[in-house]
Length: 74
Image (cartoon, rainbow, N blue to C red; front, side, top):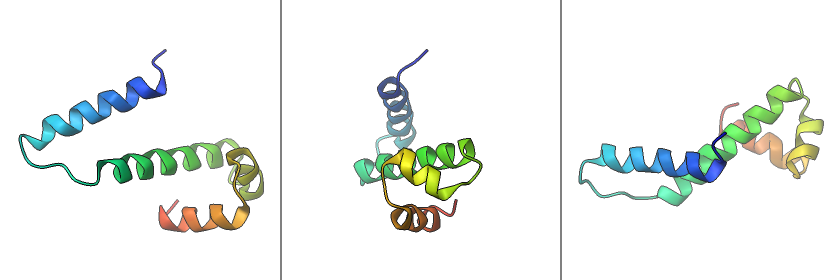
């Protein structure tokens, strides 16, 4: 089983290869948004879209979760 840092490194390697010499920008924000949205979606699916339970599992309040669901169009 591959650990999360190894998966992120592999994705970043591909991202930089696809740039083909062009300048990268906003990589940190991109990684945070993609991992955050994927994590939220995964947890929501696990709890059958129960936002209260998802917020508890994720360690955030339900209002914050609702905002992130809207932001990421989940």
